[in-house]
Image 1 (cartoon, rainbow, N blue to C red):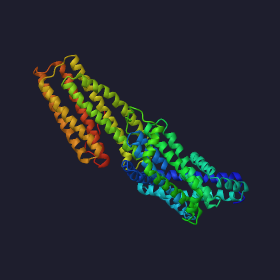
Image 2: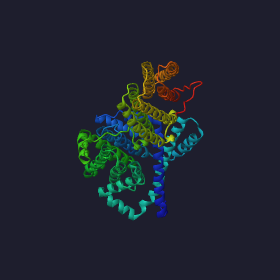
Image 3: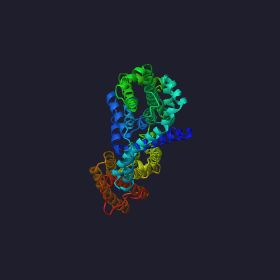
Length: 551
């Protein structure tokens, strides 16, 4: 190995680092698919309690194997108004602890055992059809590749210990922790991975090409460098989201400032934890992050206050209008969940529009009609933005029924948008009725009220079924839609009798008939939503029925 030329050494180290980063990404993606639903539920339980928040952050980062994913997702959730800034600060403290797991894993020396791990996991991954088994194989394959990458980096580093210039460089920054910290921050900033930087330092430790003090300095610098991506990601985000990114940077910077003056005593303490240098570096990383996180627990309020001074609260600052933010795409399950929440919010808006159109048409209330027309423009915009967001959720990042549910949500958006269009039609009918003084008989008004109420009940039940993913409510919505069909046919017949008997004015004929048609189509779309729930989560396909084509 001592005969390796400088170019070969450089590319061996960089190649090993590249394989390591690829393996971490593959591991993170695989674990996100496996633990995604659990990650979503855990993040949604984040509270103002610092210790509980730390637990959420630690668990989330362990399950995704990426503190960057956790923090970027937090920025997205804060930007969307799903978490407060204070809650996100608590979670960040935990993410600092969770990110140390990778270093602990790769500090083990398993010899060449990673070769059979890679080989067996690879063939299982490509030959087995079961999705869960394939994901488990990808996790094992990723772990094997991590150890392979560590060995490759070690092969490139070993010749360096024989180079006088390298030894002099190590001695220089080894006695000056600030230089080591800056180098660690630079590498982490370039790779955007504190895990990659820490593992590179551990590889140097295996080759005994670095001192513990220098290794600790680089590891602490890596914590600072990894915040660059989050700070960049916060540009253009809401002010609370910017505070989240700044909070992570302050936690890491302050932690390093506190530890740098005591680095050598700290290194002496770490030496007591193991006789193995790679293990000492991994332990130093863990101990440093744990201590810094717990030191901040009593000062979370001060941290929040400081960040709010740096990014001050603006008077009248509005909460975001959407539940989602593109940074949530880091966790596909979360992005899908928040898309669903956005669709429910839009559906509730169209349900309100349905109620307003009832007042407008039956009571000749033009103010209600104008509100519907204004809301319809909002609904169209929200539906377009939500559809575009769901299109960005990669299907390959989802598993099982969630892949199907992603497609169903796109269908449901179309249903909700069409319902908005139809309430808009009803509002326009109401304005025309007032403008042209088109009369409805009392019987016609009573029939319209009955049908409106039945359609509102059908649609509200479908929305509630969507909220709860409830089989019972979805079936109730289907039954209510059947009742709407019966009423619509009945009222068409009685309307024809009134027209023939001269009870209803001829100019009311088209408007009344079209109103019945629009209401019946609204219930059809509610029926579509109910069946999408039943088909996706309960494997119930209606015999003799098909999804109605939106009109």
